[in-house]
Amino acid sequence: MDTQALEELKELIDVLPLRIKRKLSDFQDPQNLVEVVLDIGRPPEARFTKRTLYMKDDTVSAEDIEYVTSRVGEFTSDNRAGIERTLHRISCMRNRTGRIIGLTCRVGRSIVGTIDVIRDVVESGKNILFMGPPGIGKTTKLREAARVLSVEFDKRVIVVDTSNEIAGDGDIPHPGIGKARRMQVSSPDKQHAVMIEAVENHMPEVVIVDEIGTEEEAAAARTIAERGVQLIATAHGTVIDNILKNPTLSDLVGGIQTVILSDEEAKRRGTQKAVLERKAPPTFDMAVEIRERDVFAIYKNVASAIDALLRGRTPHPEIRVRTPSGKVEIRDKGREEMPELTEKEEQEILEVKGQGPVRIYPFGVNKTQLERAVRAMQVPAVVVGNLDDADIVLTTAAKSRPGAKIVRAADEHNIPIHAVKKNTSSQVMRFLRYYFKVSNPDDAEDIAMREANEAAQKVKQTKKSIDLNPQNAYIRRLQHQLMEKQKLRSESVGEEPKRRVRIYPQK
Image (tube, rainbow, N blue to C red; front, side, top):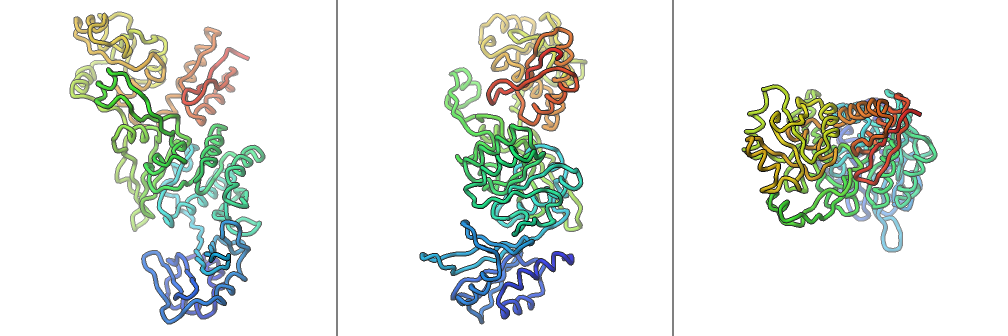
């Protein structure tokens, strides 16, 4: 342990009764001490990372409890206190009359480098949700993220600090959060209000919040994300599936709604008519499960992972591990969840690929939208206006029913047909990503910006407004900034999940 960490640990041990303090010094393992537990009438406990030691020849008395409580800060409504300018947390248990009968004295540490494994994720500018069991280090990751973003990237960071968990007790925040500012929350039920206040009053570029656990806090998180502020937070849950199944928090990952499919669509999917689908874009673009202290599962596209779960498939996050030597290893690169291809479709793609650009004939699909999507995604395809020149036909589900005109014509030409649900640009781009296996979720931002740039040139030429594809708040903000540089006017229109940027001719 470094000198500062040892000094701070000494401040926690100094509030304990003298005989307990002496016994702790015998354990010779201070760097792994997690907490000290004192319950009246029971032996004191010293809990370390991988073991718990009981001081069996001793018993905690009411005087011991009084000794500790008189040397720490005031207990607030959530029964927590601290030691000024440290990260230690003292939580109390009370009897039915309100008298304190037990204490959990938890060691708080600021560890530099704790986010090295996921540093690129934190620096991405995207909204990030951390999950993991209690004591795994989620709050420590938030503290280090605040320091890195405020000091090394000079960003305006605000920490919404409920019970002084992240930045320590007292009015002066712990140096572990770097240059970030700290807004204290007087009681947990007011956290959502302080989250909104942080954005409205203090113009942050990043807001950091620990333990989102209520519907009001989930709504506040969505509001922050919609305003283009990067949000980094933790939530009650160990894996992403916990968040999805929690009615209070499911909105963080897009929420769930029941959709009634047509008979034909249900038959095509091989499901019942009533299915679960994601209700809206997730508040958080990325999610990180801390499975062990040095094992991280990274979902780079939360929307894709949730869609997979709702279809009964297992998402495949990227798995990163810090080895005992300190080296970072990627054990599994993960992949974006896409609709599964049938053997016939796989064969069709293999037959076409390698023979130059795929020639797509749109029928019932907007040709301009398809051309713009092809250019934005930079896939090897061209749009043709004649069935004789086509390799594949792209149409809508409504026009691809058995016996339909285009189906008969495609059969005569021996050309495969692919159908999208509706004639919308988002469906067209989803098809292209699926067909050409554009599986890197990081491409989404690049594709959206290329589409915006392409549309900007079109607006300048035609002097007519254009709607871009629906995007999350972060990408919409980038698109607005691009329009500013292009000296074009833009605004966000529509409701989630179809909220999008509309571009107008020159100002």
